Amino acid sequence: MPPKPPYRRHLNSSADLETTYEATRAGFVSLALEKNYRATPFVEQAKALQEAASHAKKATDLPSVSGIENALLTAAGISDKAALHLQPEDKTAAIQVLIEKFLEPAKSKFVEELVFRFLLIRGDTLGGSMRNIGGFLAQKKLTRAILSALKIAGIPHYWQPANTRDWQENDDSPNIESSLRKLYWQNGRKHRILIYNLTVPLMKNNVDMCLFDAGPDALDETNAKSYIALGELKGGIDPAGADEHWKTAKTALERIRKSFARAKQNPHTFFIGAAIEKKMATELWEELQQDILSNAANLNDENQVASISHWLCNL
Image 1: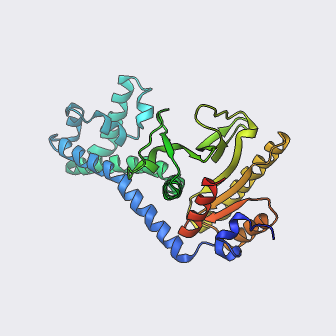
Image 2 (image 1 turned 45 degrees about the horizontal axis):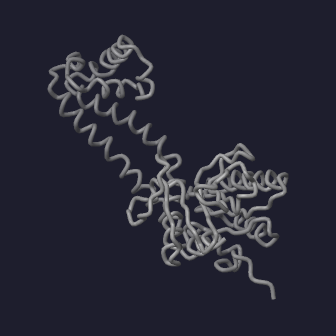
């Protein structure tokens, strides 16, 4: 009897892939908590601005208050990036418009109006950073599961942060998954490197996860033969966006298979998602049964995440 395909370790039908209401609710709560966490620095900045600005007797005195020019520019709608390209006279003009059009009309409430406008603009900044927060949280969760699988199996492994090329051995830090981009392990004679968010030269497109048959000294991202598995990771939890996420991932996975087929290679492909609706689950199940996809998992199911992590670690 042939061995069961790897996905049958944790999936019995398409229904197992569907995201439950409870998982959706928990996902939204996690996003809300992360948003509040990320908003904390902006709130503290607003408190500092309020204290400093309160020393001005009227709105027109604000430019003379030391240390708040950047905050005034923010309240005027000038982003940190835009401010780098402005001349001093342009910054002064922007602040003057803020004062004349919005702060002076507020009269004695000009400090409150300033703080309000500062937080309004910072809120837009936060909103921009939150657009891919689902992907960030998904990568953190999967990374921790893979590290746990390696640790439990006693497989030596090392990790590399996004901002350095140095490989580090200690993976006990609670924040490792926030900065890890590459993971290397040696299982027997097999050397494996997992890389997140790699622009694959063969395709010239970004792939969420790539697993290589190579050690750090032999890694060649241009060599199609060195790729063992490539996968898409979609962490968005909103059911309304599930179909769109799947369409994007499905297109990416098809592009991977076609590109590697032209190079006469057939690496594994896999999908891990947080928001998986019934129709999407059915399509995933069909692709698994037809050996189009090698594996798939629902990110909200710990057993499924652990199983697919075990699979990746033992390829």
